[in-house]
Structure formats: C-alpha cells, structure tokens
Amino acid sequence: MQQHNFDVDIVIPSSKQKVKINKEFIEVNQSTIACADVSAIRYGVSLIGSAKKPEKKEYTIDVQAKDGKNISIKFSSSKVEELLEEDHTYYYIMSGLWQYVKKYLVSHFIEVLNEGETFDIGNTTISNQGFMMTYKTWFWGKVKTELVHWDDIKYYLNKGILHVDSVSDKRKKVKLSLHHDWNAVVLNTLMHYLWQDHRKEKLAKGEKI
Image 1: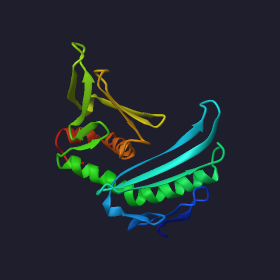
Image 2: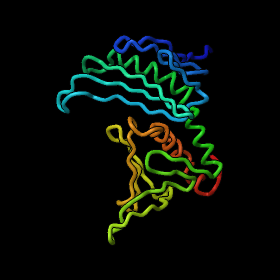
Image 3: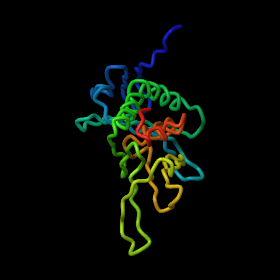
Image 4: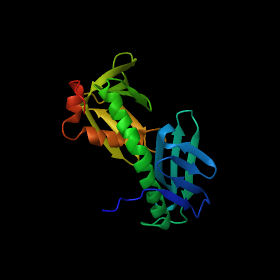
C-alpha cells in the first residue's frame, strides 16, 4: 500500500505566495519555520461583504514559532461558491499542516495533561481537572476565577467560535475564535478526542490517556 504524501508545494495564484510544507519545515516565500519549532497555529475561512450577500471568501493560515516569529498564508477568492479552486488550495495546504504540525500540537497538549501540567489558550487555562473560567459573581459583580471540572463542561462550535460552558452555572463560559485565538483549532480537536472512550473521566482520576 502506497503511503500518502502530504507535502505541499504550490504558488497560490491569487496572492502569488510560494508555500512549501513538509516534515522538516513550513516556508512561505523566503520565510521559514521548522515544524519542530512551531508553538501555535490558527486558521479559517471568512466571508467578506454583507451577511446576506457576501462577495468573496478570505482564507487565512497563521503559524507561530516558539521564538515568536510568525508566518502567514493569506489569499482570497473572487466569488462565493462551493468547491472553488481556492477551496481546493486551502484544503491542500491544510492537509500538510494537519499532518506535520497540528497532529504534533494535539499530541503535545495530551502529554502536558498526562503530566499533570497546564497550558493556556486565549483567556483560559486547561489542566487534567478541567478549565479555569472567569466570571462575575451575582453579589457586587466581583470577578472570580474558578476551576470547572470536566464532568460539568459542554462544548460546541458555532460560526468559527469554540464555546466551552459550565453545565451547572451559565455565568461560567469561555469563547475562543478559531481564526484569532492561537491554538483554539488544536483545542477543538483535543476536545473531540477527550469526549471519546471516557478519556476526560480518566484524566480527572489522574490516569494517563
């Protein structure tokens, strides 16, 4: 059985950016980040124009290195339809990013949780016990931050926003933009993983997943 090749090598017609992705590095024009040095990603497709009659699609993929260096892939379509040439270009680039970068980041965060450590995404901190959520109290409107345990969490995706909410207390909620918050896309994949095979319950007991 032939192994699938996820390498990316393309000049994007609309933006003229030259993009290369392989197991060693990501390169956009002359700017390069080694895959092993990637610390965060974010990406998404936006509709540009009015809500009722958008004019075009805008595709953005951002990659950040551990030293803070960023590279960005950005291009647009001239119309709004399904399965445009630009859609195929986007998914072609994303397949390489998933294989060589995002899979590693998901595995990295799983390892962090297994070791009983924490990581931050957007305005929240995630541990093997759950999410730290900031909310206003009913009394005096004071701002408090508390741990919301895995068994009290629900999550869903809506219009590019990842919602993570407390089931028992509607005040406690986190909103993360897949387009704008670094690694929100990684967290979304991680949540899918944790919700399968009782993994979040195992984490809460201090077991490794």
